[in-house]
Amino acid sequence: MLHPLGLDTPWAGDGPLASVGMEAHSVARLPKVLLHDHLDGGLRPETVVELAAAAGYRNLPQPDAAGMRTWFHQAGADSLEDYLGAFAHTFGVMQTEEAMRRVAYEAIEDLARDGVVYAEIRFAPSLHIAGKMTRDDAITAVLTGMAEAEAAFGTPGRVIVDALRDRDDSVEVAEAAARFAGAGVVGFDLAGPEAGFPPDMHRRAIDIARHAGLHLTIHAGEGDGVASIAGALACGTERIGHGARIIEDTTVREGRVVGMGPVARQVHERQIPLEICPTSNLDTKMYPSAADHPIGMLYRAGFAVTINTDNRLMSATSMGQEFALVAAHCGMEEADLHAITRTAVRVAFCDETTRHAVASRVG
Image: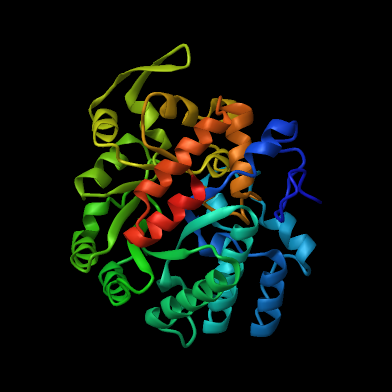
């Protein structure tokens, strides 16, 4: 189905933007900066099918791209765990260097067409070494694809390397990421299940990454609540992946934040950026509707909010669609979206030369 905003992205006609009009059309075309996007959550369905055929991967639940597009869309997921289950098939077809390079190239191409002028894309190399690749091979392939796409489409892409909270190889992942510090890898992240896997289990990995000069972001406040965000702060995170549930440590009256608990106050006073992914939060049933999402309240209360896609394939979304959603349902106007984008430029993990170039495109 053609996207009603004219974007080269999937569209779910009965989703939260089914009634979006011309105002959303306008804001969707603003320049955008993306800080939280998973490589293995953003493949084109056509690419999944082609890579599966090339690799002899026979586990796809649908035989063609149209069927896979529908199958991957996880708006009907009952929980975060159900939502994440769809990734088995993207991991499954991303086990060669050529596959990794292609997916990375196409990610930047798609984002550039969506008006994204800078992107930080993250992935967990440990999920791509079931075949002959090493972690270093996977990182090299992704960096190569992104560099080729930047040359072709003009959108700089940088890599955040993920370690998984529920695995015991975070030190090896951090060491691999550190070998590419200054060469396209800009950050280290802890992702995966939050409950039962606090970030301080991975202190050594965090120390290795930071010693190498990598920035730190930690998934928190998605699957678990305020305590998870507090744990990320205690580990020195510079940004919080998701973080929308910080609203649970505030007092809200008549749609406004009128008080803050200790964790929310720390995030607010230190201006710790929140990498909020509205559509993903709706798909994982964090909030019942777009109108219930707290991003607007957090922004108006002065939190350092950024807008992100998380998983463009599984959430059938784009940055244009995320902008349109918050404009339609969360009280955001064009000036607000422009301000949020400038915040994203300021807190990006890139070098200052890149930041200045991106800022000039944002205005």
